[in-house]
Image (tube, helix red, strand yellow):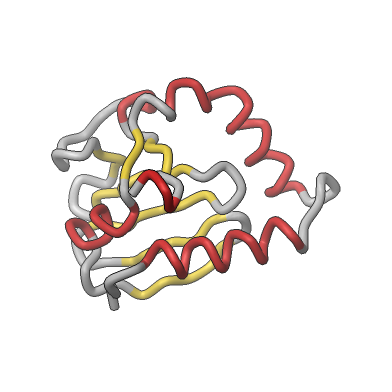
Amino acid sequence: MATDDDKALYSKLSNYYVENHNIADKNYNKSLERERKHNNNWNKQKVNINEIIDEFTPDYEAKEYGSKLIFYGNEYNVITDMVGGYLRIYSNTEKCYVKLDGCPGNDRETHFKIKKREEM
């Protein structure tokens, strides 16, 4: 269930994941490489994770899956990367990733950098 501060949950689990994994971990290493490769583009589309969850998955169930923390909702899932600090929104009805308006988009349009606390 969404709270007033889902960022706190994401940050807590992300910090724990990063502190307890290293480059020998396949998921961790892949996440770091994706961030290095795409971070400049992701920074162009920064989002407040609390607002995204309120809009797309207000009644969620959160589960960790590798380096991902997934907020499962009815119509959408918000998939966060705990190493790279980005998220994507997956439409369960369209079966694809979507832009902030809920319309299908390409990879460049559907990756969003999660704002740091001080940016929110």
